[in-house]
Image (cartoon, rainbow, N blue to C red; front, side, top):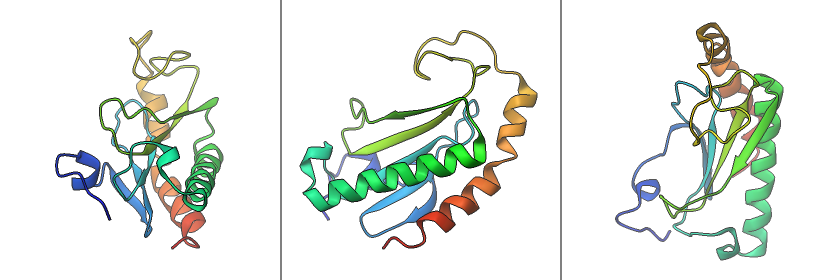
Length: 145
């Protein structure tokens, strides 16, 4: 495994690990406004999807759609945002973010200026789904190495 000594995703999990495979991990991000926010993080220190060989790219994309499917099924969002930015942390990872019409930033990206305050009862209802999301992700990803 290549590792960049100053890379936070090489040196820390990047969230609450739901699944750890040999080539990737899936984590839940502790974001108070966005329960169900997940990341798929490639194990080796690479920056772009095109740094992967063809089979690894296919694996990354397969895992990404598996996680998106589970997040949609469990969290029931209006929309899913997928993002692979890496401008701040240049280590290959994808954000899978469930979005709702009442969330603080909708329809803008979660990194934009907030447009409203999400009702606390809505956040709590979404947070209550996290154990089911964790279980469903672990079950869905269990066949990966």
